[in-house]
Amino acid sequence: MKLHELRDNDGATKKRTRVGRGPGSGKGKTGGRGIKGQKSRSGVAIKGYEGGQMPLYQRLPKRGFNKPNRKAFAVVNLGLIQKFIDAKKLDAKKAITEDVLIETGIVRRKLDGVRVLAKGEVTSKLTLEVTGASKSAIEAVEKAGGSLTVTTAAPSEPAAE
Image 1 (tube, rainbow, N blue to C red):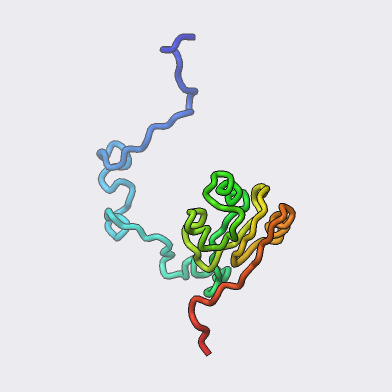
Image 2: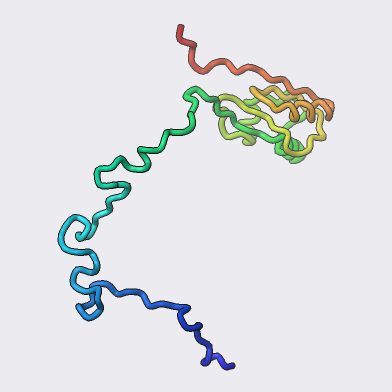
């Protein structure tokens, strides 16, 4: 076999229908769109319209729920805090608060508070003060000889009475 002898199997490829290229093609003149009407014109897209019948997306029930007052926490992993301590960007001897985490650049912004998760290893003795922490994160810090206190964040807006 030579390169010039290579070709597709019979029926493997099919030529594209060239629409609107003369009456001999069978798809000339109106180009398979019929005569007149909105759909025969260009620039028309009737998406989801079912001719007056209630569309499928409206027949199906709404699902799910979005909590309007949900809290969004900035997330920090213990491994990242340890990495910053190893790089001498954080001082493990001082108490690490949310403001310190923002200053060093571990967290971009506080949102509704900072939550610590247990991904990664902790070897330093840490004193952390954050809004939230997972149980495994608290265990990991205490196992390394440190302490992790979860403080309740002051509400950003006074509660309406």
